[in-house]
Length: 165
Image (cartoon, rainbow, N blue to C red; front, side, top):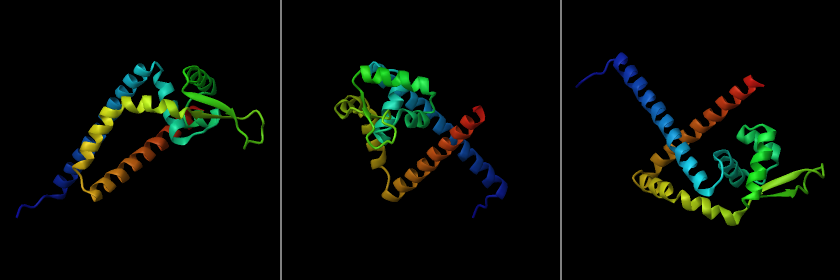
């Protein structure tokens, strides 16, 4: 029986954690590149695609809420929404639920979303093939890990934003 010293185990764990950090950085870079190519094909800016995704997942949203989620200045949000509306990607509607009659709700145009999904088909197909190689319990573990990583990223971004304010 081969015993592993606690020092060796600690070094191995640090190496694995570093490998995970490096892999997440590479994933971020590759997804950023994919999103850039998708935005280019749709003839919109990367930030516009980010906002369109947020509207699809969380919408309808007020421009202020969208700006908070995207971490964008209000003037930047206005420019993004103007471009997306001109391109037929979003609609701005009066928010009947709001106390202020000037309030606007922004929503993604559902009929345009298949154009976006079609461009992600290669990645979605590859992800499906990758997931098929894992058992349900492993997928649950991975999903939980990725949720925690996303939460940590959200928290780190919020802390940096608070320091800038």
